[in-house]
Length: 448
Image (tube, rainbow, N blue to C red; front, side, top):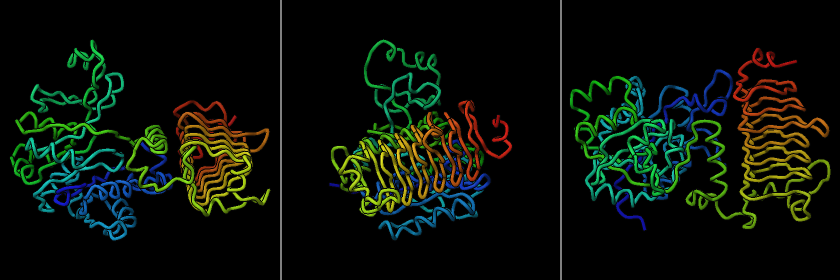
């Protein structure tokens, strides 16, 4: 049972531009979609954040937004929280110029909102599986200024990607290493190379803070000056606090899913659909089938395709469509015969033609997948069209992303390629992994 959590508020840092996640964060080549609005399993990321925290007792949220588009997009989804049963307030536009880094944005807005008690500071491009009550108990028992949510990882996983915490025998954080390489980690943690024990605590990017005490520290002139420059939580604020003797500790949580780039997004989506985030699994509701476990909206089960005139429910029953483990299908989706799906998130109104095979793939609202197309580890945005046909199949894999409204011609073979929104792409093959097709000029470079 949740206890005392009503005293804790949520602070959502939602002002980032999502550059690493392009084209997922693009509505067109020059119009950025807020990271908060990235779709995942039938909701926007910020809705998952709010709903998951609400289930643990948080009822008041403060959103740090940035600029006209970011603020307007988020407010169009969340409003003031009525639909989610919470209260939502937004940072004031006149303070946007102070939101230079996640740490600076937190310090300035905690002061402006006059917050005094405990607050949970969350990024909007990650999913968490954790117990807020356990984290609160640890935070309050130790009288910490900041408790850092931590995920235990092996050195090889950490190297060059995650910040790691160094702690004393008393459990207090003594220093931070931001994305150290493997040699540096073996120098700091020599025992990790000799023994197979628990992983090292990495910063998950979520913080439980004592607002009143942090505000007092933030008024010190040295930190006040830093907060008017770029001040990030992991690289700047936490190291400064520890260096100046502030009581900073950490609390291990069960899972963290980063959604900051295409690969991390698809890996996290697969984990969500596989049930590795129990709280989100509960929020998805009762599955249509337990073995294999999948969710299909009833309107899609009743939808017929134009070739056979049979419903999806009939095709599943007779075995002409294979719905494997970890599939979510939204409303009014059309699925043809011979389609096979596993660990896929299919948006409302999508059209999957006969023989298409998708695995570990996101397919956005009203996307169209042609006959016999194959996609593995792929993101296919809303209204995108993947043309394909028997004998001229299109294949997408290795974390390829197709932006909103883009159109791929039949026979394309793309591996690890990012296609920006609304581009018309002819049949392409042998495009190098990591290529970004941002304009028609980029496309023309690879036309033989």
